[in-house]
Length: 95
Image (cartoon, rainbow, N blue to C red; front, side, top):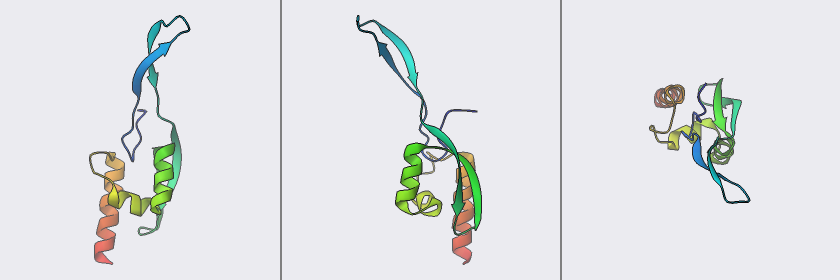
């Protein structure tokens, strides 16, 4: 399972551990990922996604999964999230 947020594309970053003696060793900064179930109001069903904590706050701030995906760029979304976005757009067009 990759350590990448499905909604924002946020992944691991690299940096240094710096000791008191100022020795530097390489390390990884991993994103704070959580397995969450988000509900689409338009489709009326829930989806399990692996999302970073900051993305979860953004989803809540924008008013839900549908509103978040409407504003999100396709390059940042995972394949699963892109399919959800397409299904939401199709459901809104027919309604």
